[in-house]
Image (cartoon, rainbow, N blue to C red; front, side):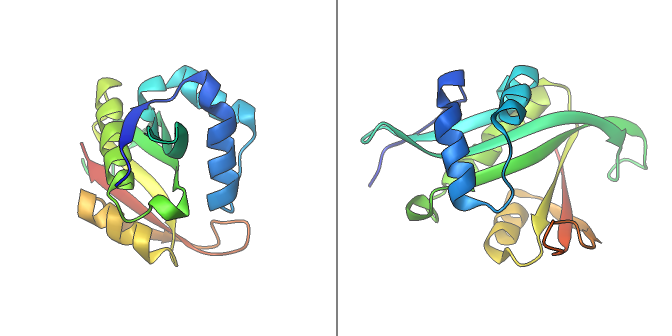
Length: 159
């Protein structure tokens, strides 16, 4: 079994994170976007590293936004937004995504967030199950959210 180390993203990880993003997800971001999230919210940008091979195998990145809470009577609050999460396919189903998300949620708390939210493709049943296991609850469908026209599910979770 691989030895997986969960740690904060570091700038030298950028090319590996971009590779994981482009390999695993249809939504790709430019390097400047990753770095802007890191610079603004470093405690919510977490990577998973296989220490046997010294390679990054997953990441989660997030940011904290101000918005109306759907959990607290629509009061203005700080909310952690999971922007992107990806795990190289051969490492999936080993609890790594759960560990990454848990660390990101702790990071959100350090920035004063009281809840978290994310969007997920309606067809991504594995991700939906993961988010529900962690405590996220589906709030609504976002029609045509993705570039290819697929709907997203909006999930929220109290912190």
